Image (cartoon, rainbow, N blue to C red; front, side, top):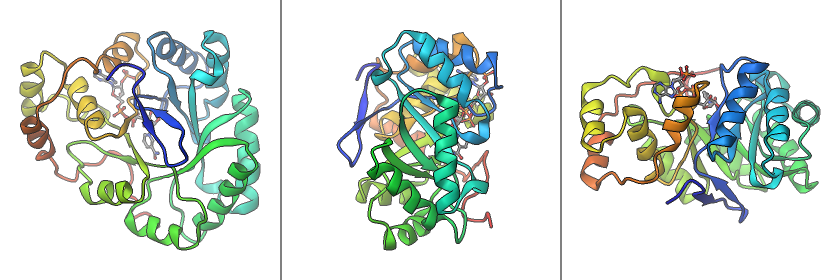
Length: 273
Ligand code: NAP
């Protein structure tokens, strides 16, 4: 496994297994610098969303980076207030304009808004069929949302981006996605920092000569998921990418998975209206 480690999606295209998250990265210089730093340190995948209000800075950093566009995987997301067929088409055009990078690799529904999500999905299918995006996906879809979507979808989502850490080990959802050939992306993979001082995690990380953040990210990779850590600090951006040259034993993978306590930092998709 090296820094260019990819996972194959159900449409035959690859998605890099490590991406830089940009939620709560301030628009402007902060986003620009974080994305430039990530691209300088071998990240080839950037995750943004229209609600983060930093798409234009992501696009600018990509253009200035000198990395060929085709070597970078860019995701953005359809926000809740833009759901519905026509609004989703307009929102996609707006994201294209903001990013200004010729094409978007992955466009996804950010949250499974009731009554709207399946109509939004039809718009994403059209965008995909029109060749405007390389892949379409969803985020925060639980099994019940996916079952409902698949009842009238003609394209199976390529990915489902969900909160996933040892402290929120959504095994049933992961198994369901695997069965349907949907790649799972883990967001907030560092628990937004909340669990990085857990003595059990710190102890295991020391055993491997790694940091707690690196252990959490490696646990994601060894589940064949995509990890999306966010940082605005160059030292941490580098640290979070240094996860390829060690291997967590199967016994320690199980110990990490046993930390599950349903701990979330984001909304619970099962209980949002
Ligand atoms: P996260 O990546 O779990 O954690 C980010 C926090 O950890 C920041 O406060 C960061 O601070 C700190 N950090 C980063 N690397 C560290 C390290 N090596 N050691 C110690 N602290 C470190 O949380 P997240 O931003 O919520 O999730 C990551 C990405 O997933 C988002 O940015 C976004 O792209 C995506 N996401 C998607 C959804 C969705 O609904 N689809 C929801 C949430 C997140 P500094 O920046 O100061 O380093």
